[in-house]
Length: 160
Image (cartoon, rainbow, N blue to C red; front, side, top):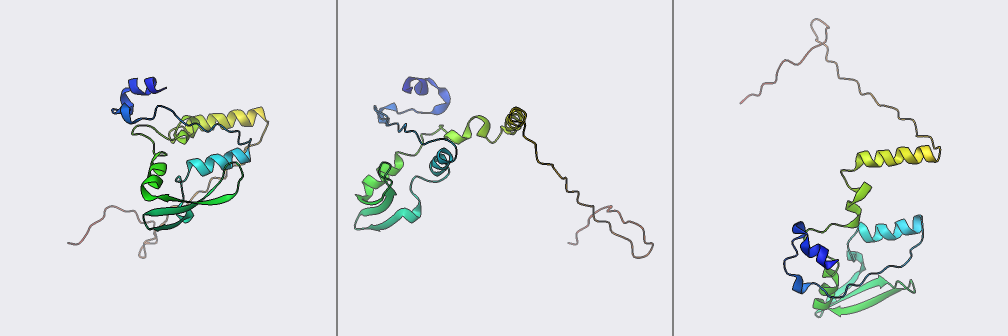
């Protein structure tokens, strides 16, 4: 994987000596449906550690609370400031890499693909699309106070 990244011109990983030689990948099953969505939303749509979980920053140390992945219990941990920053910075992506949610049909420019996927799913499961009721906003009509006919804008002038 590192070879592929290093040979890719757009990723700009010039100093590969600073990259770790061993990568930690957490590949646990998080379930299907709603539990998986909740797990991914926590990871993808917020920072690594919310501000509300940082309890104290004093005496050159940071105390924070976190949820243990195995026991699901909330625990606290105090670390020296530099070690805390190192843990946080391990979650920052290198220049040129993007988060998972920016790819595929979730990408911002993939609206047409999402509409196709929705149409296929609607057809496969014989679902009905909710009726779209177009809200038509009427154009404001200005009536001339003298002749009672519709006025039209012919220009805008600004006083200087």
